[in-house]
Image 1 (cartoon, rainbow, N blue to C red):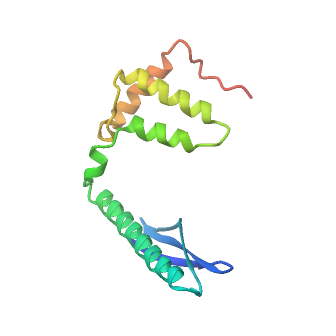
Image 2 (tube, rainbow, N blue to C red):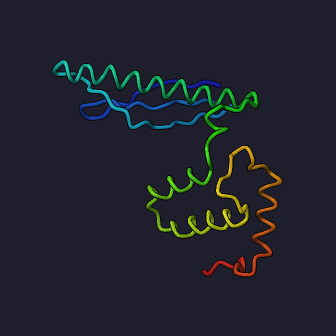
Image 3 (cartoon, rainbow, N blue to C red):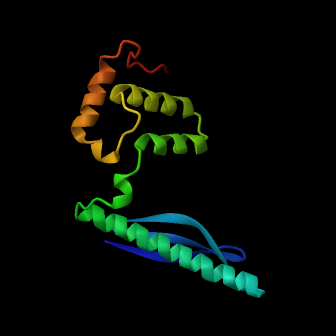
Length: 147
């Protein structure tokens, strides 16, 4: 397991990305953090320094998340997150054609739980199986997808 901070050369900038090695596989995760190749003034130079700090903080956070998952440790910020708030925030920025389908899925999940909040810790395999069974028995849903 390892997370390395790397940068890719663009025209007049570098873009940071994470090189993640996990379970014998490698993947990259691009960050929206850029630095100037040749800073022309003190403002650009300070921007580069700040961007590097931000990228390094993201790298450290990602490494912590992966390490916590390896050892089955729950991070504190994940204990307090409301899954439905996360879904609503996600849907605000989601622009693909299946937006309505995802929105309806979240609404059915809210209907299934009957709660106003859902903690990620509560989403277990048995919870998901119960939700699937509930969807299979729901009268409004046929399970057929039109071609």
